[in-house]
Length: 269
Ligand SMILES: Nc1ncnc2c1ncn2[C@@H]1O[C@H](COP(=O)(O)OP(=O)(O)OP(=O)(O)O)[C@@H](O)[C@H]1O
Image (cartoon, rainbow, N blue to C red):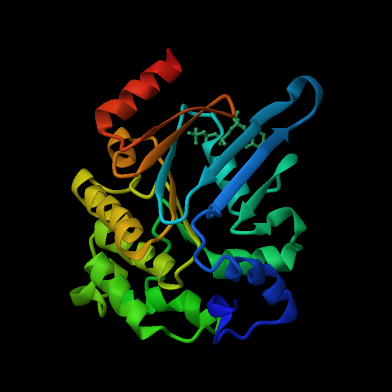
């Protein structure tokens, strides 16, 4: 064990947050992420909203999964709970073998920093830093030594080789989002959560970004969980999980835009 913590300036607390994942040793039988009877309610009494209602779902290591569902079905709440950004009312989430409910605030912060990558609709790049500096920034903040081979591979997969010296303002939207994805992939996180990653992109740039999210799962073994409203975006995933009224209502594998649309229509009809 301990392979994922090597070279990291780990405190005892940090070790507690990371250690159990290192025990997995690539064991694909342990899902990268698992939710069990996850329930989240807002408000009380008559005004109670059950955003998630006993959701149990696994996300296999190395798979690219899309989460879809009508507006208000609980997609964002699920992703926030899966990432330790929100606390469930009951039920639990594991990342690898780590039960998030057992972590304190600092351990959760370290878990999000060291074991999860995030990609949002907004690219969130620092405008005064080059593409390369933006990609490297989180690792520098975490004082992680640069894994040059990983950096080169991520740059290759994302096709950013000739753009590394450019400022974000000199990049297209698609290229900026590719920088954001490269930044999320660099630390080889156990899971990348992507929340509407193509929401700000034209369809060609969106296709580019989705293509390499899919490549990162297939070629780098990266676990990716993406929330999207777009059946075309979801068709890049290996599997689509559909939510309705805070519950897992359906799922499909090897999706095409047509099969995703069929499932959505059934869900709403
Ligand atoms: N902070 C909050 N306070 C009260 N209700 C909330 C809060 N956050 C979410 N909800 C409610 O929980 C339910 C699920 O919301 P959520 O944002 O997870 O859905 P969603 O599927 O992501 O929706 P959308 O596709 O519109 O982004 C909705 O009924 C929403 O109004």
